[in-house]
Length: 96
Image (tube, rainbow, N blue to C red; front, side):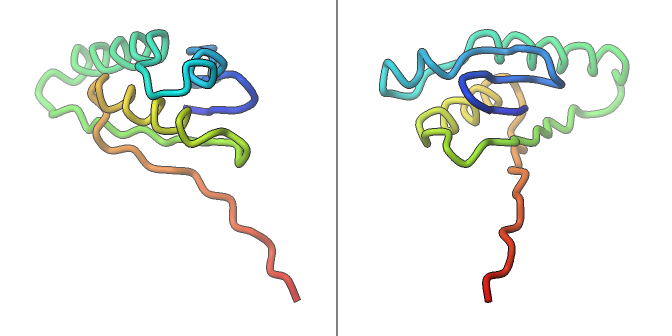
């Protein structure tokens, strides 16, 4: 899941906008993101019926994204059945 500018993307596909969350000023479920992740989970269960769903998602978030947006995306992923959410982190260069 990538969050950059005012977009939420799943595997490069638009899955929501951050603007509504920012304007509301509180956490909320991102409906498009929820639906995409839920469909991916259901497809996985059809393909792997005898294995438990791992529920892993990786968030790639631009540094200037407000925390309320990050929390909303994180919570939406959890609601969609992805309790194992990790963050992709870019290491800062060493300063001398």
